[in-house]
Image (cartoon, rainbow, N blue to C red):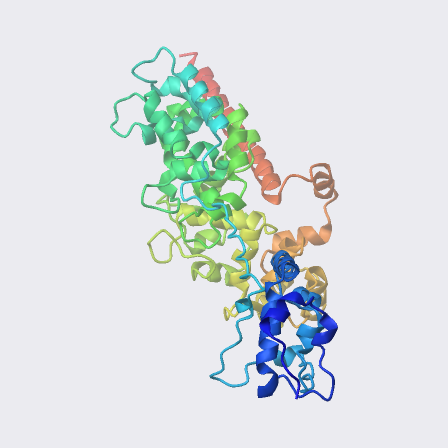
Length: 537
């Protein structure tokens, strides 16, 4: 039996680690005989200065490394073995160690070890604000510079600026076309005082963050009604009235107010034809941004010759549209029926395609008179007829050909419309063309993804969609395409930027102008002749 040393002797003995390693013949530490001895030895070892320094170093390193694995590796081997006779457990798979042993098992708290500090919480990332309902506020320097410019423009006008004086603010400060002056002035002068004060302008333009918006959003915000998130045709009337009153290229129209109104209507109809593709009559901000209206507005403001602004504002284009409508409207009730429209282009269209138009398949009529087409409906028709390569025109005629409305054009539908073309060719003693031959030409012209049918997507990728539709229901243009007029081909090559509508409007305006000059000359000659007859008497 080993005799335990006295406590007084333990303090005098130096600690020898080798003595702590028990020989094999000594019982395990859990035996009652040695339990008291080991407890005293361990208490004595903990009280030594070197042990305190060692433990402090381990705790410090454990905190620095953020885990207990490194600290455990630095402990003395005697603390890891513990003299136990039980063999170590086999290492578990990382995949299995993540799974709890049972549904009610509580996962071990790894941060509860005295040598492991609590897991540091990651710093919360602050995401800056990226959406502003009224637009992103301008930077301080930009805002300060804008207010300085406002002070200069409003200097000497304590009561504010009148509308003519406010035109400089619209163009130089707001960077908007000058014909936005009236609508912008009225937006700020809500009390209709006839003046816009400095503080009222700053509150509207700067404090509402309009100065930091893009141009499309600025135009949209200024034109729309307060409770609307879209633009209507009525919203464009103020800027067109300002344009008619102040543009030098439209000054000659001041003597004919009725034609001023028709011109403004035509411009608005053309805008909605090109931008409002779904035909709802409500122009959204997204549609405004996707279109070319903003560049056309600036062009109209910079260009003195309004006829050079081919997008929307050309007076010559309006003149052609109105005169073509007036020629078909024989009773001048401002409505067109089937019999009138069939005469368009020297009877170029087939009866079947005219029936589809008056069935209101491509577009619902706004005339509100059954069987009658109004002026707005005619504007959509003539723009689609004379430029079949544009996206709105492709949609217009695609709906006409799509008899069952399933979104695809089958060979049967194509044959239905070509049958009348074939009959008209035979009546004109033209050499008939079999539909099988025409079908191959049509398929090769469009190049669809599936040869058994055509989709609107196929027409979007094709530049010959106009010829495709002309083959089916416009005989005059079909024959012109087959003849390959060298004059037209050269004209297209010389001016590739012009659309089919631009070329058509130019030719028709020259023709109409020559006819009008001829009528004036004949009337003048008749007057002279009458005077000569009466002179002897």
